[in-house]
Image (cartoon, rainbow, N blue to C red; front, top):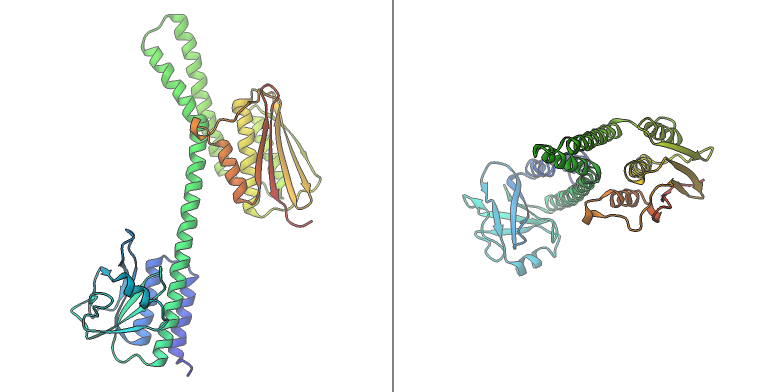
Length: 363
């Protein structure tokens, strides 16, 4: 038999909540309120697996005020495996000791357990009356929607955590690869000046101090400019031209060679391209001791290749995170996240070439 319209409305409202910008507790409370209002539950509560990994569930949200749900449910692991095998709510009576202790204060004569899956959680509720076939169907559907919401929220949290970690890595790279080194030089020179050295030594120290402070100031200004400056309108080529112009104002002349028409990249891929190229040019500026650099952008089938090349001092082995240098690691991570890759070719006194390979879409 088709559920009544009020039941269908509850399903629709819960489904819409799943795609709205709400937190997991807000989503859970909304779904529990729908269960109470539509199915006549006196009280309903959602429990999720405990963070400590023990066979226990911790309450996340509740709706209804007839009884107080406990904060934590401890259950028998083997009994729980049997309980989550079926897709029907489990009707419990009295203490329900075969699965878990009674969850409500004061105790309820009848209560039900709706497992949401082996690793998702469980809904505990007290029905006001008998749970018929139609109500049981709606309850299972609401439980499925709530389970999907929990899985989606966990995925969203993981994505947000990954984004935060990537941003932390970016900030670490920008601090360790430039600012921290200049400030360390400044601290060393201040300590030397505090020791009251000979006038000639003091003057040389002040010159190094001025240079370190100036370099630190330049790094901060350039990073802030890179963070707040929006990409140029009109596609990738204008954005690359603006980037080269920006480095030119800072003293690094960059020769740009582009195809007449570059592909229109999705925003995340375009952002990765500009970030990696900017980091590569910043490395030339800071470390290469080069007169200038060349930037080439070419389409090769369904790939876009951007090459930053200089004729500076080069290196035999690139410094990595263990030496406090995160720039190359960060460039590769950004390219990988956009479906691309970064390769670096260098040797002492022969310069360095950084090649960024990205998906360009169809021709």
